[in-house]
Length: 550
Ligand code: ADP
Image (cartoon, rainbow, N blue to C red; front, top):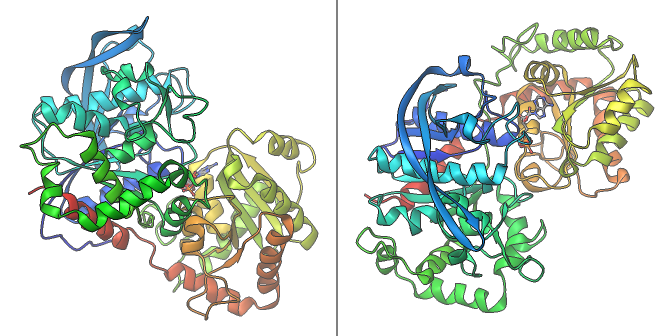
């Protein structure tokens, strides 16, 4: 898609643990890739710094080449003392899916176990040690290569230590221009780390062990030595975003996990927030972060943070509309679009045949494509399966994750060769495309959902979403029964019980069965919906500009 060029070109460096298409576990990889690509198209200079995982398929990295060796400070705590060493680190560059990347890894991989093994997460390596080392290595690379990006855009707990290290170490080592944005994709995992473990970054964690910095209110009672990397990242960032407005509201109001509320809404903190907000003037505030005063005090961090806190922004994710384009998708047996929708029926027939399901155009295909973890509403996914069985609909699940055991068992026993149910317990990019294209309904019954991409991808492929009204799902799906045609795009429910799910799913199934023409129209409306990164990237660029130094 053609992007407008922005008048000011910014240098943006992302720090991330995932990048689609080749280092993707969930939505994080898609989001960083989509945002980076769109900002490149808008005329910004974007680089993604990421770990060189052993499992990366190197043949899919264009122009992969060695860039430089650097010595990365690294420590470990021994008997209360920090033993400092450096780890020789090899920096590579290349291009992944159109995005320039910098890949870092220990030069001698055999001497340590960082980022090794066959998987991105959950491999044989120590994740905390690896990501803390990664944060240090990324900054060390920027210093050694003499770069001064306008923005360091950090994602998730894995990269939060970079904010701490930047302000406490690198801003005094000549790196002065960057301002830091942290995007929270999911607060489910906030990165807990003992003070002594923080030494993996090469500096002592003790200095961060206060409530103003990286101690978490929630754990201070029972785990006083634990730093919380996400909390520290927020304190040390110039702006914090979440991936949807409703999720931002939920975490601020305490409805969703209430993490921010419990860490930061203490009465005394809260009143300071107001005081500072009223009193602070931008010029003075700017001084705290200007290159002439690199030794920022804890207080200025706190001011910075609390000011930001009031403005935690929710910027809705987009989807990569080139990657997800039913009119061009090469993984499909037939292509289609809102104007030429016929191919969708072929995709459905093809999937039914391929999976050994009854080849009926009149049975709605209800699809779930998801990581199988508690967040995703495992009990409701199961309930939907049985509801489809009762109602004569077809149900196709593509999912994997640590809650997949039960589904595996059902797939092999109860529903082996079933004519209407197929449970595919695996991760498969190509099957995902084929299922989105075939689906009449895409179901997302999450307990919480920071943004959610599958409902958007489903819509792009003409499916009608049925979702629980939480987080980004609430921001993207508007119920047919309470919105005007043209506005409406799916079905929503509130409760976490089966009855609530049935309410929405039944309405969708009835609509499909009894009003096919209107269903087809709804499907076309969804295919036409603007879901690209255009709007969201503009919001990010505006945010970058609001904090960037000249
Ligand atoms: P999360 O980031 O919590 O996993 P999102 O909805 O934001 O959830 O993103 C999920 C992404 O991962 C989508 O692109 C979806 O298509 C993909 N995905 C999830 N599970 C699978 C799977 N088993 N096989 C292929 N793709 C999957």
